Image 1 (cartoon, one colour):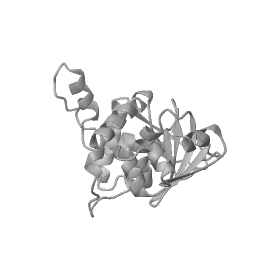
Image 2 (tube, one colour; image 1 turned 135 degrees about the vertical axis):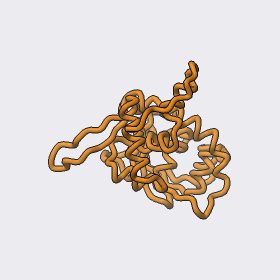
Image 3 (cartoon, helix red, strand yellow; image 1 turned 45 degrees about the vertical axis):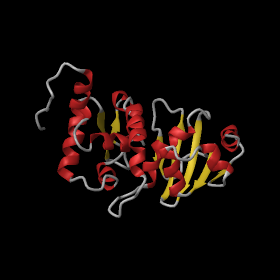
Image 4 (tube, helix red, strand yellow; image 1 turned 135 degrees about the horizontal axis):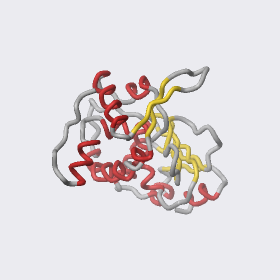
Length: 210
C-alpha cells in the first residue's frame, strides 16, 4: 500500500482532500452509492481507470474508513466493495460537486463515455421533496432506479429495482441532462411531455402534479 500523501495543513478542507482528493476516488464513491460492487463491475463502469490505480484507490479507501471489502456467501463467493457510513456521508458532497459542474455538460464531446446510472444523482436533485420511495427511470442509454429518502442503503441502482417501484419515469437523455443542469424544471418537463409518468401511488401522483 502506498504511503499516504498529505497537504500537511491543519484545515478541514485540506484533510478532506487528503482522503478523497486523489483522481478517481470520488467517482468510485459515486459507483458505490449504488450498493456493493465487485471489482470487475467497478472497472467496467469507470472507463479510463487502470487496474493498478483502481486497486490502489480501493485500498486507500479501506485504510481511510470510506469503504470495506467483504466476501459474499455461496453460491456467489465473490468479493464486493461497499461504502461505510463515512463513505455514504459523501453523497451531499457529490451532489454539490455535480450541481457546480452541471453547466459544463452543455456539450457532449465525441470521446465522452456515458452510463445511464450516471444520471441518477443529478436527477435526484430534481426529485427532492416529492416524498420517499423507489422510482424506475428509463433513458435512451438504459435503465436505473433511485431510492428517495434512503438513509443507510444504496441511493440508486443500475437497471430495474428488485421490488415494484412507486413510480416509473420515461424520458430522453437530453431532457435528463437539462433537468440536471437546471435548464428545465420537473413541472415543465412533465407538463411539456418530456417526462412520461406511470404508476398509481402517492409518489407517481406527486410527480404528475409537480
